[in-house]
Length: 430
Image (cartoon, rainbow, N blue to C red; front, side, top):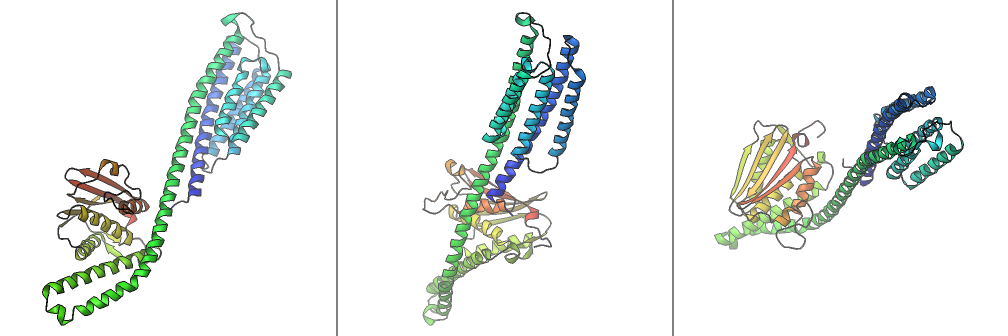
């Protein structure tokens, strides 16, 4: 069942939230590693006295929280903005605790609050970002009043430990922001691309529904006059005036053939609009399906130049889906119109994929048409309202889980449909 636009938006947002939580986990591991290195350098390198047990306890709590976040990541449930904000608040709390233990606002690494604020601005809605700003400012204000003192060297220039720490902090901020904000924006761009594709699919499906309703209504209206014409032409075939003139009789027979074709099309439309696949399909085999399709197409078209090639291999049961038949008929009709003297239908198999190729020796597709194939009203015929055939082919193939490839060359055009065999196989549910 295709997803609705709302469901697609929810799925896209969920994927983005999970990806962003994963980036926060990676950033937190980097923070853990950075804090371990900073403690090593300050305590053992610069011989500066810091409350090592308390700092290691805070670091252990951060590691435990990150492990819990990693376990949460593998639940598979959507990550909400509230969870992302909670994770960022935990990071702010840990940073505040470490700064409290190491000099408060006088610690050169106090500017790491900027990293949390920028991440909040990128990841969260406006209310969350401003909330994170308020919390960070409150923590900074608190650190300006309460913190454990930190004895730093107050020399000049680069000999000043505070200046060294400030330079390291700025470089660290810049590197982390460039690395992680770039990746977060990549997640957002991919989400936007999925949303755009979902909206386009929803628009196309709505267009198809409207056409289906219009076609169904037209089919109902055409049913009665076509039946009347069929009865009248059947009577004419037995009148002496027509039986005595072979040329006139042939014309009446051609008219009756076309009326039968119109009735078959109308019946197919009504059948397709009537319900589920199980109601509009029947059991057959791959060979029988395509042989019947070719025979019916040749009987109902003024054509005798179709070349049918069956390279599928061993026969297999399948469902004779009316939508699949109509899709191939559409391609053959296009080939007949473009190249009355030659059309080819090829059926092949590659692993678990069914390949159906229709080619002709017509003029092919213009480059500007090739670029727009699969969209409604993109036609080479120059008629208002035409161009729906390939649009429907693309959508039917996509619904069945397949794809359509179109190639154009100086000797003609070729349209290849590739479908998973599971989409047309005969299952117990069919």
